[in-house]
Length: 309
Image 1 (tube, one colour):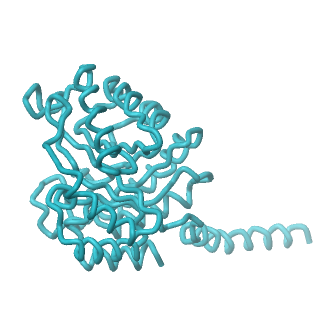
Image 2: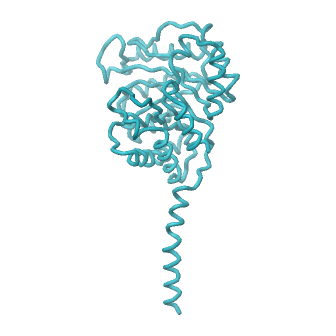
Image 3: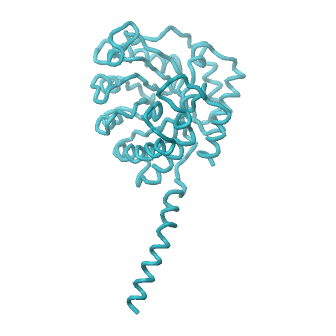
């Protein structure tokens, strides 16, 4: 009798394992999927598009669950300045976005290239130089106070893993009550990411342009492995993270991006799998689409079907 019970138990476990595995890999993840981010072109900030265009664009983004918008304001020059701009031209556009997107957080996307990657030049940023950092901070203060932004989104490339200059810049850019967001690449190791996260409110992983994923499945699997690492790394901080996903045209004009491998479909598949394997995902905020100006109707539909469903 005991042998029969043992055999029955083994058979039950054998039959139940596939069902459990399917549930684990397909169960819903109870995260709010309407706090996504998106990178916006410089034209919104610098060229004042018609307000009607701003209204229809903002309403469309609101319907897709975007609350955090990174408006490109750079690039920085070697002194930490950006080209002159007039708040009077930008403010009406921003106000239209605010009316159309409840809970909007408008970030000034402050980008630039660094001396680590491109050497010393009139348009490269040396974050180890205190005077350059001071210039960047003053620029950011002006964007928040005169431009009306809710926060700063740094995208300084490349920023090497372990860069002490960038840590100091993050410390010095505390503009209360403005938020501080940081874009970073996959080369940052968890100890350095933790140091950055302790100095800002949001980090956004640029999980694309990897140029090394041999297949869509491999790319999804990579993101599935990265998500639990980020959840664990940031669990002790107040910082939340965005997983950047690519929305590129059929011919992106670059060899480091393969649109058949890196796209919204493969990215969201990997992110959801990673969240299912994360015991604590409170630090996850949402996805970030790069970029608004390259996205197509097909991308928007994939977003609805795979992320918002």
